[in-house]
Length: 71
Ligand SMILES: [Zn+2]
Figure 1 (cartoon, rainbow, N blue to C red):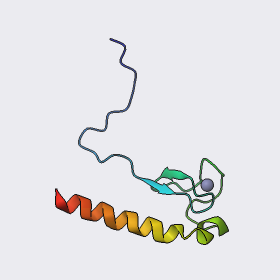
Figure 2: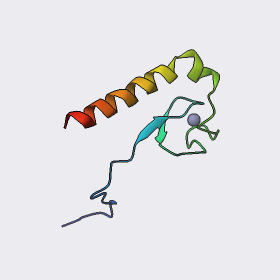
Figure 3: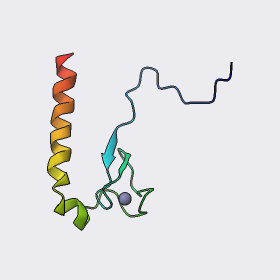
Figure 4: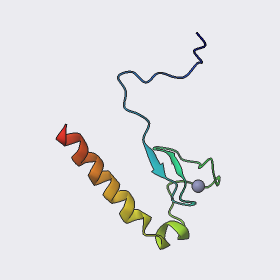
């Protein structure tokens, strides 16, 4: 057996991904400094605003909540 040291997340929710509001790449929820662009992932940049990503994110959140309730 060659089991690598992958962190097990038993009993925990999978890490949630959110969009970096600066470069619009996926980062883990709660990330402050974006690993992609090095900027503050919470501060909306022009690309984020122009692409209506805020609306997309909101819809994803609603779908997520609805999906959980159905189970
Ligand atoms: Zn970024």
